[in-house]
Length: 303
Length: 135
Image (cartoon, rainbow over all chains, first blue to last red; front, side, top):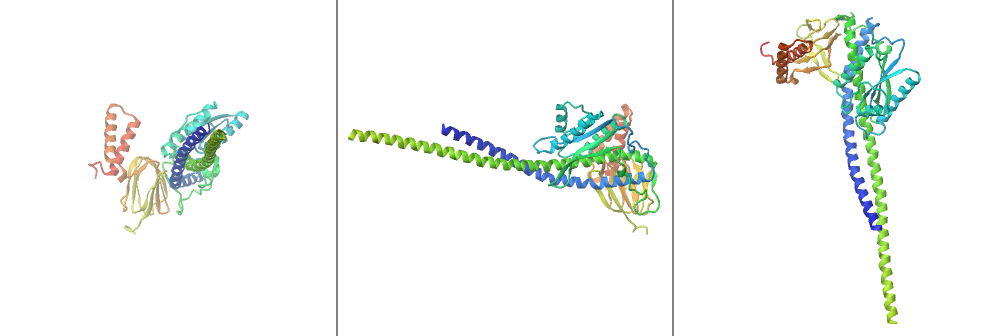
């Protein structure tokens, strides 16, 4: 019946409106979190800059050239990928981008007869690889919105142990780099062993002093304990970038969801109005038809 | 020169810059056991720190540093630590409870974790001025 269709449409419009309210709220929340996440990225810069400089100075001072962290292994059998994605969905292509990039690398490794290891970070990352039957190392999750340094530390210690124990020969980070609110890109960065250019460029001299550093304990010992910290700082920066990107992606996804809901409401109300008009027209036609039939009858009686 | 000389001091943790200012003296403790004081013009130095109560004079900042590194060069001192707290941020009651807990545990068994806990609690209390008996 025509009236029934109108009622169904009205129900659908109401439900789309409710969804729109939710997506609008999520959009606003994500937008406000982008700013905070960006500030966190900025706040982490001084530490990583200083630690990078210290590592450079130490490396240039001659120490650490035989440190396990710096020497690429001759035969790279196993590559470990740290895939940093989100804990939640509803953020457009954010998770898919990171996960697809990681999966592509893993497949290439398998084709080349190499071993792989995946350390998923974020619930979506874990469930994606688990569902597809990849063998996983420890998973880390529950902090993709606002990662803390402790989280980076836990991941760092884990991958450093994997590397030093010889279980893996290389560790790479796969995450989404936050370039600006409008641009984010999925990047793959080698983490351990440290690349040469990371440690080159230092002159072994303090900024403005003429003499070289005094070390306590020895330069080798300092470097030995500093390099794991450096790895942690790198992971922390990646986590922060990933969090900012996640919010940016979510904001964009929720904005287009809100726009779509608006569009849907518009077209649904048009259909509903037409259905209502149709049913009214039909009713009038029935009434007119009925009245005419009656008057025709009475005319006949009068005649 | 004495008295008026200052140097730039920064305490940087991975999450933010905790403290940045000028000071006439910084005292901290390195891993090999000794306290070390930095005055302006200190020779370039790079050291590994242990849990300690680092004192920064002039600005009156007191910082609890749980491990980390110190770098002195060209007229400024930088302390890098993945776990540092300013004295005013330390919860004295909590630190005291942690210290007592560690001391009780110490009576039962003796291991490196408990010892580290105790050292940390002690350093935090010392920085916050909650130790009572020292100075």
